[in-house]
Length: 318
Image (cartoon, rainbow, N blue to C red; front, top):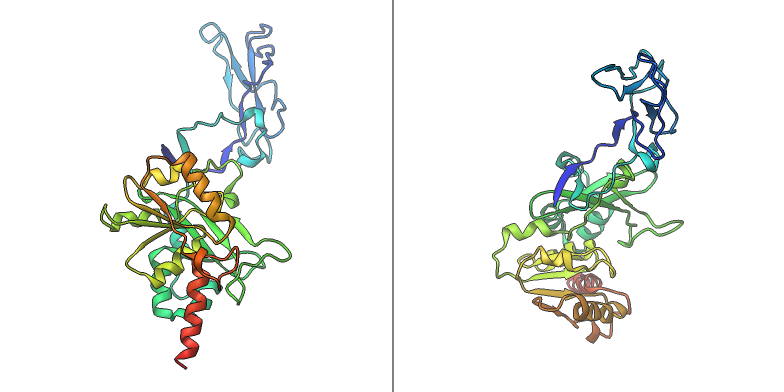
């Protein structure tokens, strides 16, 4: 898989290769149906009958590219999202886009913390919370009229930034879902033509652990960070949701022992079926730790368990 930085700025004018082909009369040699015109890829319209190339390269050789001076105020480049589908290049399954690493670092300001980081600092302490957020490269972004959002960057083991998930949390540490679900993606801000190949959140951390160190996989990125706060020596990753556990994500971890920690309830059975069907032969086990906890409701995860336990301990010691 080759990763290339996404460029949303593309040439607005290109030779017409759509079907059926439009062939015009060459303005130089005068022959019919031998002249390929330039078109505006945002409209499909011919730019001008003087702009194009003649098929008779040796006998005629006419070629004229549209320039800014000849097109008035029209820009020579346009946003890739405005390009008509028939002029977009075919998707190459071996090529995906990535985000410049400096975009990630722009969100990693130690003096600006997200609302979630502030909430967890009040429970687990700022030292342990900040350490975990720094370790996982969790950024902070002010997004529209949302709060101080978390940016959970998907950084793979080769230090390629695949994307970043922008999530808004309220003062109670829960995701903001009213009046709409406050979740967005960094790559969507750049363009809808972005070729996304996701990886596990925290995948890059395998570079700092021995090959025999087990990997613990949870659903949400928030849960992975909280688990690291509680167990800093263990390697936690997140797949991003109940339906996001995929074999191709797990395969990047090699032959490491994998322990799955699904949310309580339906997720446990769904992940068990998925492992039996799609991940046979892999060193994977599913923990039923939460299933045996009566004080944990359906749909809650191991992070909820740790938060409840820590709040109880904090109150007990006061």
